[in-house]
Length: 163
Image (tube, rainbow, N blue to C red; front, side, top):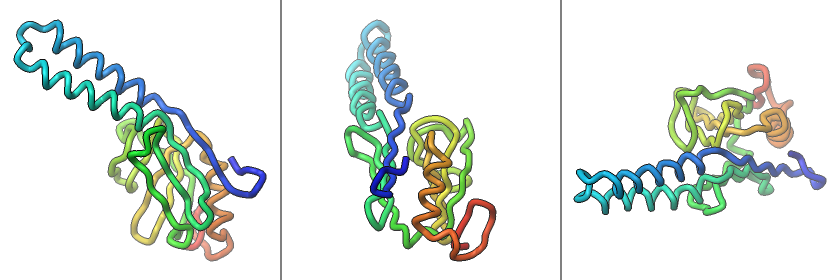
């Protein structure tokens, strides 16, 4: 959402943390209750600890204006963060990811995806590269980015600028 100073800040809480905590519980239960897995208990425990640790990195996704760039950060544990200079953006449009694309950070057919939940996203084009940012505020983020990169600097597909 655009704040009083003209910048943008939006935080979306996702379900990825819950999924990671459930996975940790399953790994702990298998390691503890399955007698045939006794030799592998340290492995199950280690995987559970990693899931718990990562759950603190994927509780929410914050997208905010940082002056001359857009900041994107999973949190509250800031292991995964990225900034995109507005000057490098050549286009912006509202988009949707697919159920198969899922959540997290990974490559898709449309470009690199950063998503905490849901299918709505904003596609940011940077020359030949694309980045999809999952958000539950696609219209607000698209409008803000178009205002930052100068919607009048060229024609393109609907919702895109500087193409």
